Length: 237
Image: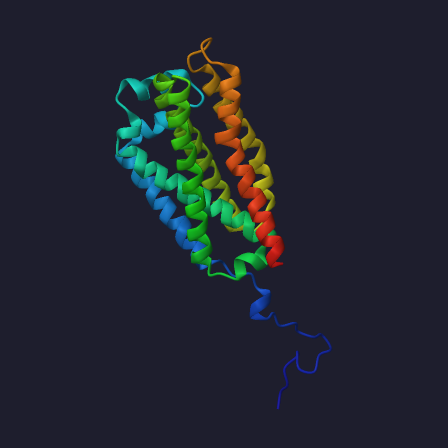
């Protein structure tokens, strides 16, 4: 009886357990596919306007096109794109929290954690929006109210589209370093956003009032969010 050449050899075969193999997160895959569908739908239905939104942060001409062709915030482009923005930013928030505080996220279902992230990002958008109304009324800035909200929408859309690309890369590589690469891009976009806000009614803006508005409504809510996440995760660790 012939025996196999490899029978009774001294080399051991290491068997990989199922747990040792990285498994893709099915929930994350579904969300990314849904976001891709939503982004594609927006680009097909509102290709020109959506292109103007993406470029308005870099060029005043495209911002003027948005305002001249009609109020973009009253068009169906706004809720459709804002939905994409909130869902994308929420996925980014969940991914970051899950990386640094995995035990905290593990105590809830993935979809429960994502729902909370969506609620948080939505609140972070609409609370400053209401604050903007108060700011415009207190300092007689009603004429600039629309421009402030439009630039906020433009900024978030640019951030969300860029983040979506990085989320796809992260999902494919499972390397968290892609988020560190995203940070400089976010800083540049934030700087452009701040510059555009300062350009609104140039020479008429009270810098002290603007400083109070920007720090209170655009920065403080995010600092509070980071602090709350750190406290909750520390208490649950």
